Amino acid sequence: VGITDYAPMDYKDENGEWTGFDAEFARLVAKELGVEVEFFLLSDWGQKFYELETKNIDCVWNGMTIDDTALNNASVSDPYVVNAQVIVMKADAVGNYPDTDSLKSLNFAVESSSAGEKILIELGITDYIALQDQTTALMEVKAGTADACVIDITMANAMTGEGTNYADLASGISLTSEEYGVAFRKDSDITAEFNKIMAKLMADGTLQALADKYQLTLAK
Image (cartoon, rainbow, N blue to C red; front, side, top):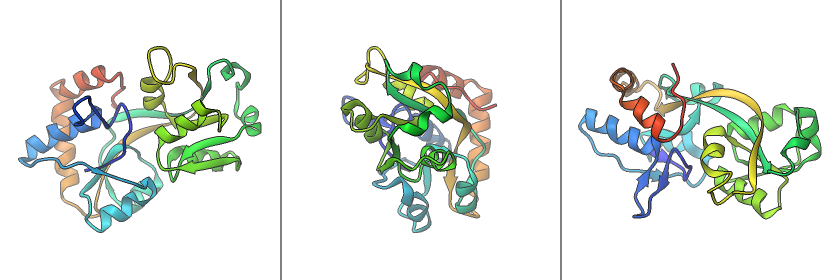
């Protein structure tokens, strides 16, 4: 299972074991399939479909946005969680940037080849640095080396604000709405089986309980 370190989807607990919504979800599906999960940390999110095609991994399961790139490069599951791309910056500055036009004076940090980078390009914003993951983008904003970052709202909700390591950061405007899916190799027969298992876990309340645990919204 190809992942990145991305709370609340995949991250390590105090014992150094992978946990999070996607990690727990993956283990549930693996149990139904009668197999064991091995997590593979992707060093470059932009190479995820190459890793999939070369069989270094069997799926990409890490809060992956369902978009044309994913659909053209993989067999993608039904959606399972609702997401959005949001601006994150210092909490005392958020109110100064109420719309997309106001963002164009800022310099950004963003995960390379992510939905966040895609929306910056669509907005015509070129003053940004592309990094290996969303956590590193957050760190740039905390350090003051970037004015803002674009990350998934799922991460923003879990990792910013009071009681977190990024207590002085806050979410600003949302730039997109989207859904997460799991990517398997093209023409794979596991996608349909995955969708059946996911439907079962949604119907019996298992996935809803998991979503409540991690404060996520399931796709309907």
